[in-house]
Image (cartoon, rainbow, N blue to C red; front, side):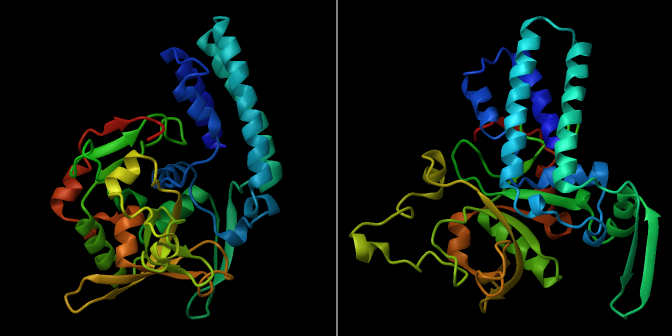
Length: 340
């Protein structure tokens, strides 16, 4: 719902910038107006505004577990609304009329989402047994109160830093970046990427996992991946022996980004790490979201070499980062194109 509202307001912004519908930017936004791309800051925005609800109190629905058709329907409606907004803007409608139109459109969006996903509870009462098998009851409480009072003390979104490893010459390490038109909550926090070298990635993960704190990360999952066995390994497939030529890894990480050979497309969770005699990571244990039929009941093994080639983003608590990395997060971010 928030993402839809953000998109409709972006449509108005495109008009004010003078962007043509057939231009590259608007065409890119229309291609996927609904999907959030797995951006960490978007989760942060939603939690900061709406809070959290235990799954027991807001269970899954069929469309939430298999969302393709729901996404198709809502995407179709958003493109229709984008057309209508541009037509109204072309007629010179006032800002008040445009805002009123967006609010009316959002009523339709909310209705579709509520029918497919269920209406989130305004308040809930949670009954559960703790690790000592003692019965507890919490509530009535709002989702935002639940996060602020019971979750934030152990997992504070405000303390998390999003690191990326972008080796392109145009994007130096130690700087921060954001992406034009990327977000999900109007007035919410921008998506900020803190660009750091790979050794910072590795050490922050080791320090986090040693403290029993899993690490969220984004990667290009389809390359050199054996799904059934659950293995991410650059040496698993011997393409050279079969075809007499090499693939992908003949290009540098930077070149793969520049020429469209690599991009981040999936997020998972690092829950364990194996270290060598020098304390350096050798392989990682990864929890995926593809079900128990893949890997070892949903868990994969990722080698260090695969990590260095195909992992682009990690989110860690600032307490595991050096002072200079934390300071870099306060820099004014460079704005990258929406399609970057």
